[in-house]
Image (cartoon, rainbow, N blue to C red; front, side, top):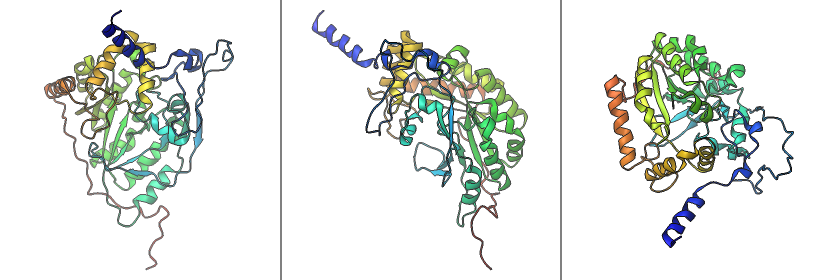
Length: 377
């Protein structure tokens, strides 16, 4: 083997994430997106489970979802990112049982002393006082209404919501004070709240974005194991449209050489089901997400591994991820430009707007309760 060939082989070997010894047994992780569960980056000691060959993990049961209630002190999160169309958001849950392996929010679990891997999708936090906090914060003197985004970090309609109904309580507060909201979800559970959403839509106070990443059921189940199936998300778009609720289809994320071939088909299906707007986000692999995604590729699409990662790096300046403002959502370079043009042309042909419809800010009425002391006179 000559020197250039040896160098290329060494590069390829170094590119592959750690071997399967650090993965939990498949029986324990069935129905989950990640197979790794390394300690968070802020922990003084690092722990990870692995098979030492003695079958010591053989009798352990499948991982179960654990929920811890968190008494939050505030509920509206602010941001000043120039990449985002909103400056405030709400997250009623930490972690997400949908288990999307590519989720850019996974690293946030490290702030809880937990792993961005399996912990992110199995050890969840619920904020049962979310609606009360929201009412209190909206009633503060001097509050200026802007669109609140929900679903920007973890999905508000993940399976946990069926029991807790925190999202429904939040919507009731927003409806009562006529506050605009934009929702992003991968769950058909959003249709449960059509009664509230329809009332808000009559006042131009709401829009709902359904994220549809693929129409391939098998790929969806492997990549987003506990999110709604593609046809159910499209069905949710249809139900929302029938109720007069503005709906948007998102490809979030588009994965090169894996889902980008579906751009036109997904937009066509969404348009047929009544979507009015369209948007997309290029795959983002910040911090721990890179290793988790690469490990997933080796398990589920090993034949695509090189092609997918090479295209990602071609759009990220040679890296797995570049957080530079103005580029982190879209990437750069010829392939990123090709994706952008294909998306724009298909949306235009189908009558899907790439411009966001503005919601009504003029009907907001501050709540008259919520824990804020009233004036004496």
